[in-house]
Image (tube, rainbow, N blue to C red):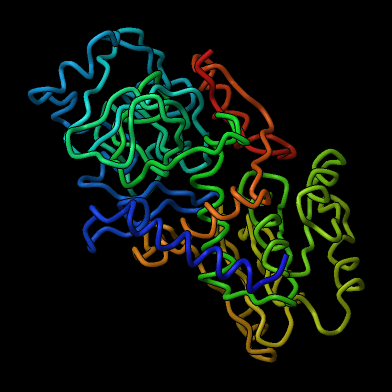
Length: 402
């Protein structure tokens, strides 16, 4: 697929995205906020409050319905099942409640019947209370949902009841049977993607696109190593990099994961559980090294990454679970860079570009999320346990309602 064609299609999609987001203020980056964060640092975009940005309901929710909105809500249940967090702690604090009021959309909001919700590592950090931005208690986790529009606010013009959609954020939280989202963070879900795949788009793909295109400024013909390529962000990075004409290398810890990485864009894959896998990568890339490394576990790999880079190479930090000691001198000889990624810091124009490119990817067929494990809503605690302690990622983890 030619880069010129991708550019023209993305430009058209950016114009479409701009129209969709026309009601969003310039002060909001990302998905009506500044976008979600990536890898182990995945973060939901900000809303009007910190609580909202983490998927927590506003202190004033559920909203009172305006005149005429009662008709739109007619026939819907009054209560729903949802995961609620009343205290910070381990996975056991994720409590299934069966009597949570169904939220009601305000004038620029959309009520969605949730079919699936993506589970992201950052949600485990928020839940534990160790993250640098935490919501007010109680709250419902989750930002990336896919489902069907049930009702819209009176100022929503681009969506209607019955539309299949996915979100890049929610207002009331996604681990629930119903959620509300601002209309500028809700997008049509193509028929060729199921709801599980729709719930795997938001944080993983917007993170991967920002890392590759906005942060690394990767160019066709360059090489990229996706260090930890078999998870949600890793698969997204491989698909995007291949579509944009890069030479794609990946790593994974299981045979299943490695085969999946190859099927989703990588030209070559390495087993990062082998003691000498870094030597094998060096041998494969030769003296020129790797132009870009997308790093999912920088607290383990960063020092070694610096020895793989080409002149002017860039390590893009997507995930980190702790500190690491490095020798800054290793960045000097080849004038390499270490760049952190946070969609929370993403300006609105960057988000519009991401929307345009990713919508084009859905239409053209190269954006196809891979689902690893699906958990029922009531098993959210197990999903949180597994996303952190799993010995080998193999696609995206999602919650399903039934």
